Length: 266
Image (cartoon, rainbow, N blue to C red; front, top):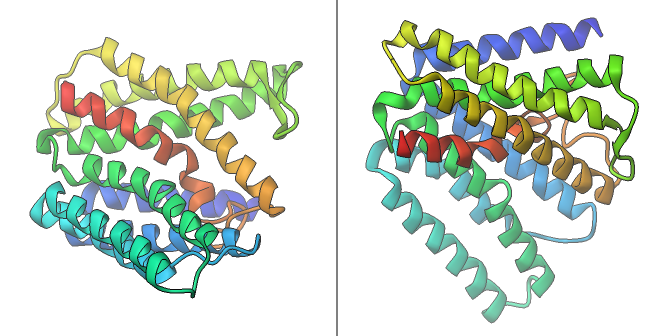
């Protein structure tokens, strides 16, 4: 437990550094996280006998944040398109991989890389540069506070199982707590926004937080589905007591499109 707490504090410190330093540091950390996430997903799929085209996936994972931050999202879309075409061409003209292997490659392009792309658009400021800090706060605080609230409410008040075939410990009461925790995350972001000179309305942030509190649970449960399918406990062991990058970001990634829509519209 002590190790888990220490690593958790270190992760909070890393997030604070991403907020405060930004620039090249944020680009390096994000790109490295995306590459590690691809490695973790590739390892999971290989454990089931699939052989995704990892080289192309690593290239996209390493380049898409750089392309967004430096040249805007059109270049990222071009790189994405070229990677998909390359996967298709390899399958058509080479016997190196099966059709199932090509489908596994395309799956990683969607999950997690499509969600990483949405997260990159949020934290790079490519959509609304003025909302970068607020977007980062929302996309991390809402699902993580939702997850924390779900854990404590479920631990003390949980009675009815939510989906025991996937996650036996999760309860309906804990899930409700997750929605509330997400809304509290929106409230926290609203309270902190004067630090960066924002003045956005409270109600939309509460709604975004509430929605992220639920979507984050879907991300967590879907990650659990894949881990059960592959018969593994965690995606990785990069963070002792916390698992790998995908274990830490499963709910955040699923919430990234929601926060992206909020930033774009508001």
